[in-house]
Length: 324
DNA sequence: AAGGCACCCAACCGCAGCCGA
DNA sequence: CTCGGCTGCGGTTGGGTGCCT
Image 1 (cartoon, rainbow, N blue to C red):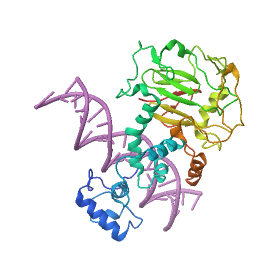
Image 2: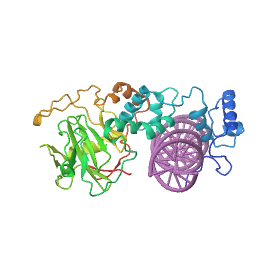
Image 3: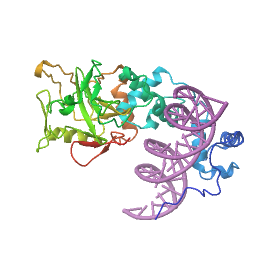
């Protein structure tokens, strides 16, 4: 049995609001308030609108002190920081930006800001209006993010992740949008994951073993538990320590969350990783919103935890699906 | 000049959670 | 404790607009 509609759709006006309707709604609310009941408000205000439509119009457009127009750099920074850390919880993000609505911020993010961010992360892609995806099977070259030199897809057949001993490594995967791969950026290292059939896999057929671990190109091994760790972390909410395991896929930033660890140093292969010691730390100057602030936000909003957005997780360990 | 395409953003939809009866 | 009404939220849609070919 379906849910009862919130209103009779045949008897309410839909679509864009006229200036007269705006005026009626604004006048009514300014005189009487919302009365805590949006359902009955349109009738009282003499509007042939659904209560939800009235509420949305008021909140997003008519209420006082709404700010329209360009977002400032500071607002950009706050949005980016919060999105990376808490995901697409627009109402929380909007609460940090006086005068901005969640709808505004959501639209701004989806249409402009994530592209802007992508452009900053991938300056060479500035000219691309839209990433071509999926790529043609013959395109076996991609542009290395750091060196900007063409690299063969052969190199992508093995993957590398931070050691299982150091689950809190800053871990910044980015979607290299012009080819069929995901890059995991963990400076000075970059790990590249091929995408097959719209599927992002930890490891490829050649590098995975039956126990679920993967042999890594840099002499490390990613264990099944670690993949599980990454797989399960999405329901965990904040760990209280480092939450800067950020990634971007197809322009959508997500954040890996894991258990806290103490300070570590990685000296394997002479490569220095940057591990966190409980301090808020980011790799991208855009993303330096205070962790304590965000934690406070989360706790004050019910601490629902959060999920990696835009990835549809497969039940199978270490495998992620996402749509295009 | 015109058609196609991509972008932008206001508005809609449906679900989840809250709260009172 | 349960149920139903309502609100709030996030994802999605679609019309308007501007750019490109």
